[in-house]
Image 1 (tube, helix red, strand yellow):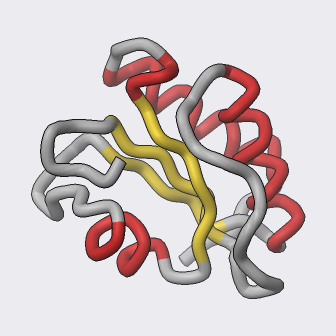
Image 2 (cartoon, one colour; image 1 turned 60 degrees about the vertical axis):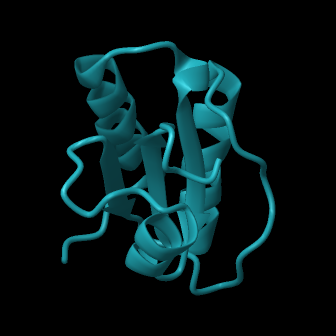
Image 3 (cartoon, one colour; image 1 turned 30 degrees about the vertical axis):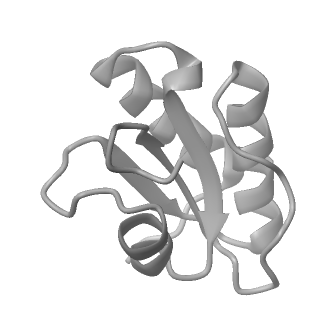
Length: 100
């Protein structure tokens, strides 16, 4: 899987959200070392959904930068957590099955 700088990853996720619509606060943004475990298993986003997007960043610092920028736009979520292996940034549209 390709890795991306914070700027490219942020633009990718931001544009995905814009394309899929809704208000910024309708979306949850976060970071993970294992995006599948975090998004599908922990947040309960349906696997078949087209309402989530993730990007692998060059580093944990880049992933955190992407998360912070998405939170500043108004996405739900909270900064912090993770470790040096936390290189995925993601966002998903919150729904009745997701947590949150």
